Image (tube, rainbow, N blue to C red; front, side, top):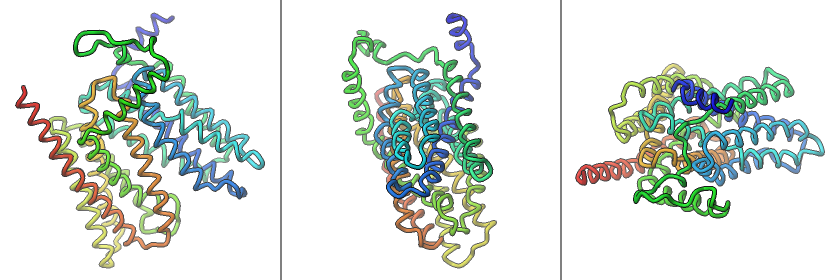
Length: 417
């Protein structure tokens, strides 16, 4: 049975494996969205735990543990790490059943398990990178972000139409399918980097001979090594501000019903991002920094145009939807290509720490934006657009330095060759 299972894994079609990884992304986002929404319902009549504090707590845990858990998948392999993260997520959702009334404190346990052990997304991103071997990785990462959007909006649409019990069991069913698929997922070349030979041809200390503390120390130093590189630092900050610009609009729609001017924005985002993702499939030869530059330029121009038109009193919804579709088109180019700029410089099967840093940055952007929109929940649509415009311009300015740094490093490599 073991031999035949390995044989099946090795012969599995490429797109089937990618589809499984995209399913893991979708399942994780469905669970994340449901956990937040279900928690707010449970806490409706509770005074000592505030739902906003719970969301901040979850995001804070993800900021810390995304990098660590995804990084450990470099050593313990993607499949085992995926099973652990999805099983932890399943347990956190199951605990919601008893987290009511006097047992509302169980929510803290549920959120803690999800935030510490349920970071599936960066592990799935690492698996996608392993499978594609870095070839047109930005297209497949863009597909994963589409899966994120489907998981998030699908959950939001389902909440009003299904009972809490039925919705909870549906989410648990999606996760159980994901766990079953994870048992069959494996990259044949997914080898712990600690068992591979180094540049001198000498085999280093194997993972079996390392203590957990030794691995943890190695993990932290690896995260620091990736994060302190100037190019990576610039890209992470450009990503942070672009995410805040994007979330600053999206979160207002999800949290407040008063921003009617943005109600059709999710439709525009879906259209624009899908079109941008499809376009990525056909521009394989263009360098990542150029694709990112084009993408951020489109996003900056369109959101500034929307801001100016709204300020002048032109609130035509068709124009607004069109502009946001182009904004999302640019975003579909900018973000995945930015990821690729960082990750293609790291060795294959050793990229979990990098993707974990990206997910930690995304969680930090969510946390800052979440606090921002509750502090500015009475501002107008024009003011909200102005904030998004400022944030995306800051992102673009930081990216200019990242673009130059990447270009100069590529020139240096070319001279050395």
